[in-house]
Image 1 (cartoon, rainbow, N blue to C red):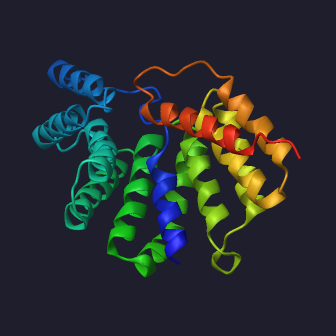
Image 2 (image 1 turned 30 degrees about the horizontal axis):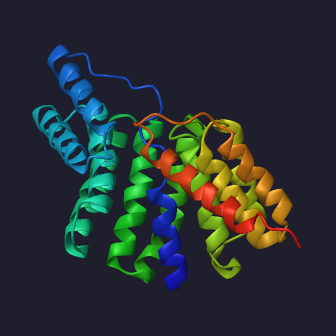
Length: 257
C-alpha cells in the first residue's frame, strides 16, 4: 500500500501544467490580472512566483465568484504550491482541499472544462494521500472519473496529462484494486499520440516497458525518442525534469551484455 501511495504522489507531481488554450473572462481588468498571474505561474521554478500567482488568482475569484477561469486556476496553483511550497502535511492538506473545492466550483459553472476536471482530480488525489492510504484508495474512482472527462474534452491538455496519470494509476495499483499494465500501456500510448512533443510521456512508457516487458532495447527506444525532442522553455518546468530523468534512464540501461 505504501508503494502505491508514494508512486501516485509522484505521478501527479510531474507533468506539463499550463499547456492548453485559455479562455479569459470578459472584464478587461480581470483579464489583465489573470494574464499577469499566468505569466508568474509560467515561471514557477521560482516558487515565490507560483505563490504570488496563486494569491492573484484567489483575489480575482473572490471579487467574482462566478469566474470559472479564475476558479480552475486557483485549483491549478494550489496543487503546485501545496506540493512544492507547503512545509508540513497539515498545510498540504489545507491547500489540496482548497484546490479540490475550487475545481469543483469551476465545474459547477462550466462542467465542460478540461482544466477544471483535470485539476479537481489532481487535488482530490493529493488530498486523499494527505489523509491516509485508505482514504486515497477510496478516492481513486472519483479521480479516474475527473481525468477521463478531462481527456474526453481535450486529450492534449497538460500535454496528455490526464492519460499519463490514468496510466500511472493503472501501472501501480495491484490488479485486485483495478490496476492493469495493459491498460497503463494503452493510456501512455494515448498520451504520446495526444502530445508527441512531451518527454514525460516517453519517460513513463519507457519505465513501464522495462518493468513489465523486460525489454530493455524497446524501453531505450522510447527514452531516445523523448530525448530527441526540442528543449522545452522555462514554462515547462516538469518537462525539463523529465529530460533529466530520461538521460539518467539511458545512462543506467545502456549497457552491453
